Image 1 (tube, rainbow, N blue to C red):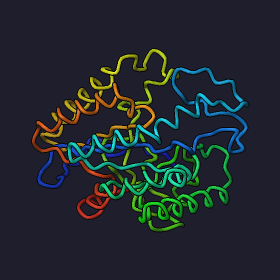
Image 2: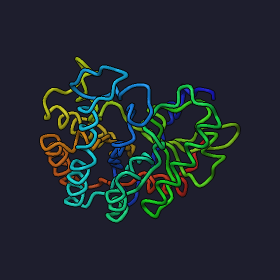
Image 3: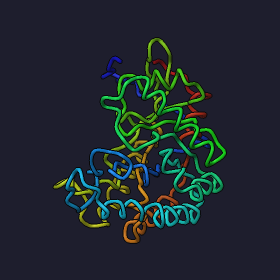
Image 4: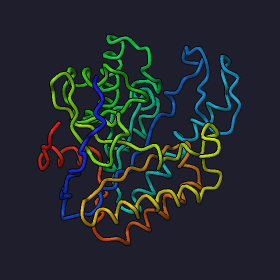
Length: 299
């Protein structure tokens, strides 16, 4: 897999979103609760990417498990209701095991008009995973998402991809895009063994994971910090979008943004952007379909 450090270069495309929107706003909810690492599921250690708790490592950690349970039991419902309040449709990155363990929420995601995107069967990175094991993981994810929601996922986002991931998605078929990139503000095509492949970049700056202690000095200690981050990004891209329309992503997690004080920040943000004309709040599958139809720029 070769790197492309040039991208669109000085010829950043002047695109046209539906109805001439200045910005496409992509709300992405990571539904990972129940698929995280835990010795209860045979993993060597408990999940380490959590907020505010000391992880002992190889022991089962019931406190950490309960934090994830909050997202599945309560947080996801708060986010679903909040999205309904503004008529906003989101893309849910769905771990297969999480969906199987909460089929009630899984069905509701699609029933309320949101996209269920593949996010691995377990919420684990693909660092040293063999090609065959990763192929099996993709297939298990597709089967789990389709069985619980009634819809086959057309998008994919890994916790951490590797050099084989995109080739395996193409080999599997049925996928329109991945979000395994943080490399641009717009969708773009990449070359995968001579094949054109669409990636819709995600974000690490407008994400609620900054509430986790691992971010240290760059993290959020006050819920309002997240609101300021979202609005500052929106204002900048909306201004740029007057001449060259842009895309903005917001990353949310039921166990984090599903907490009352943090959900309130998303509420205020959605209220804020609803006051601007020319904002297309879109699922990633819709962005992918639009891009494939209207923009076929160079790889």
